[in-house]
Length: 234
Image 1 (cartoon, one colour):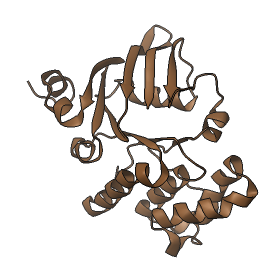
Image 2 (cartoon, one colour; image 1 turned 180 degrees about the vertical axis):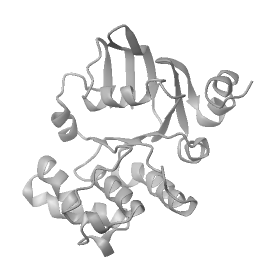
Image 3 (cartoon, helix red, strand yellow; image 1 turned 45 degrees about the horizontal axis):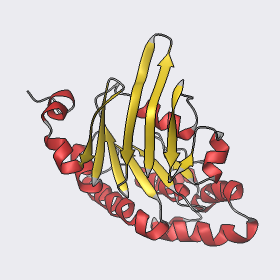
Image 4 (cartoon, one colour; image 1 turned 180 degrees about the horizontal axis):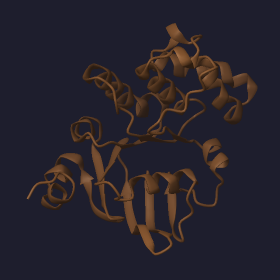
């Protein structure tokens, strides 16, 4: 569970996040909003790359903001980025080991890496160098990295961007299986409203740094304010 209380971020005279208070309980939750709404800034707050000027964040009851980015990873926070961070001169397996080396004792690393590779269906290409992987395989490497070492909260930033419909469907099924398989909550940012509808049982909408609405996804996407601010309807 993610609990945000009065989160405010200021860049000069701009507040990309302004007094944001919300709770997300769903195993797979969504985060949407128009460009400039503060979505990526919020992920950066959760990841530790941006420090809010006020507010608090609890993840499963544990205060997050006092931890360094590395200690958040050790505590179970994982994140993918819009541009995948695959090391091209390392194999798919070694990309996952690079995470395992930081978060697990040596005796636990192999099992965790192999479990993650199997889950994301990359065992057959585990020894292929990152430079030779196609876009979908690279996205699956990113997802696999998020599953190494007892994750508690996984942040996925536009995980399906650039994928075909078939690839997006596979990714959706994998993401939906994560909470039961790994015990982690997943927060998904994506501009694909239908993907959010299919993946997320709960969704939060930001607009100019403020909470517009949070609740069951089907209700949120039918909300009149959301349809005006985000879906472009009148």
